[in-house]
Length: 101
Image 1: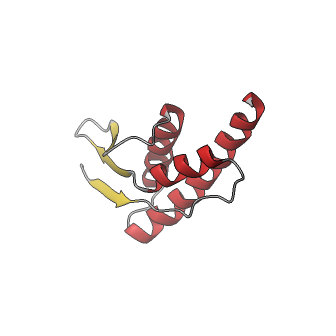
Image 2: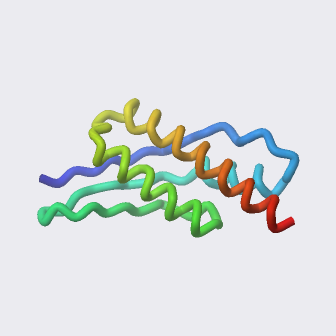
Image 3: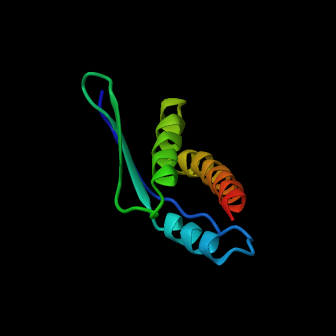
């Protein structure tokens, strides 16, 4: 069985005192993901654009795919799951960014 979930995933930018983090979060807000399963059962994810940070893009694809694989079938369920994942990804990215400063 094959299906696709296409979402415009929006999350409010995190409160941060680092302008670069706010810019990256806003870019991530505008990224749409498409997840589908091919006839062989393999999952695929693609993004319509990049946040500019490969690790965030990869993490977003993994999060969206995980949400769908675990049973999120409608837009509300997928959006809720991905919103939590995006927040987690951004928090982790900000922690790593602060360590490098």
